[in-house]
Amino acid sequence: MSRRSPGLALAALTLPVLLISIDMTVLGTALPALAEDLDPGAAEQLWIVDAYSFVLAGLLVTMGTLGDRIGRRRLLLWGSAAFGLASVAAAFAPSAGALVAARALLGLGGATLMPSTFSLIKTTFPEPRRRAVAVAVWSAAFSGGAAAGPVLAGFLLEHFWWGSVFLVNVPVIVLLLVAGPVVLPESRDPHPGPFDLVSAVLSLAAMVPVVAAVKTVATEGPTPTAALAAALGLGAGALFVHRQRTVAHPLLDLRLFTRRSFSVSVVTNLLGVFALVGLLLLLPQYLQLVLGLGPLSAALWMLPGSAAGVAGALVAARLTRRLAPPALVGLGLAGAGLGLALVAAFGGLAGVVVGFALLGGGVALAEALTNDLILAAAPTDRAGAASAISETGYELGGALGTAVIGSLAAAVFTARTGQETLGGAITHAAGLDPAAGSALAVAARDAFTAGLQGAAALGAVVLVLTAVGAWRQLRAGAADDREPVAV
Figure 1 (cartoon, rainbow, N blue to C red):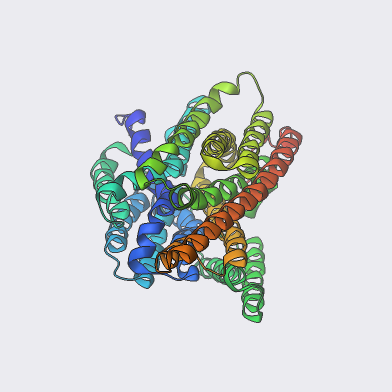
Figure 2 (figure 1 turned 90 degrees about the vertical axis):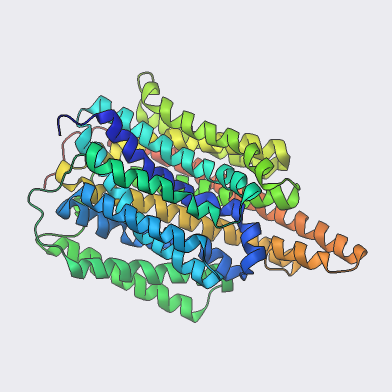
């Protein structure tokens, strides 16, 4: 292990998180082309985007704990192979249903990658200052990947079919499989105890019905089926929590949540990604179908947001020399909220470009700091489980952002036009006589803009409230969290 280069190890650890974050947002740009080819309905379109994030979120805690037991590098390499195979299946999916299934398999592979990369940072960089820099680079890869997804998709769609946005994963996976065994150290919990299969099943039983309820309400409104699913999920969640408190070797050590810096940071990450990914779902469609830009042009106009995300994460550790992390987290999220407020108030090309840059930079700055707080709070032997909780917040935030913010925008659009999707309305308008078609196209674009601005306003409120809450709670908890969690 001593002969391995920490720099090469960090480079290898950024590859999986880059791919996973790109996959969270790459479909936003590809949706118009994908919808034209596969013709998904509104619910199918949301599931194509969400299946990946929800499956990933549902399995992260299980996979993080599994990595603590069998070895984090081993799990990382196994997951990489699965992710590559699922990428090929998604690229050549013949139908919307097949693509949903492939996206779910991508989530399964991704669930093995995220906790492994984050926990390996803690074991590779035990010294706090070097760890903070490594976390900043890791966070920059996550933020940059999430923001660069539309840029990459725009370039690929100018030259290839929509499946290329998945197939591009394969060379990176091959590189990781070749380099990983050489440059990455292995680490695991030396005294893991037995694996709690019952808790793993309960965690899925809690997540899946709740997700189904959220999706049903988003697409059909409150229904008895949604209420039943939510009740089943919450009941399984209560059983899961009870079991973690009573068994000798729990799947999830709930004592981690007694550390205020840990619990507040996880919630902050969830809400920051909620706002970021929610806008990233809508923004490419707005640039292409409302403002009339091509996929590559739309992607290039989003490039400032990508650059701001990388810069925000990289400067976070340096800024802590002048301001305490709680103040920086609050300022970052407040700046991100200002960006969404600009989108809500003004729209247009200038409004969304400047607003997206503020959003990407602010969220990345805040989450580089909260990620370091999460790692610092967790014992080394439970790094995988702690990392999994953090990544569950990320992925659940992204999926909820897509469902809630996307559904709000869709509800405004459908109420004004009677159509399910903007792409479908534009296609329908093209088949009408010129006067009626033009009227429908204008009404559809206006309705989508109104939905985008309403969704941005909601995101702005969420981020400002999160900024205030995170600043106050992290500042109040700084003294409480000086002692390590007892295990």
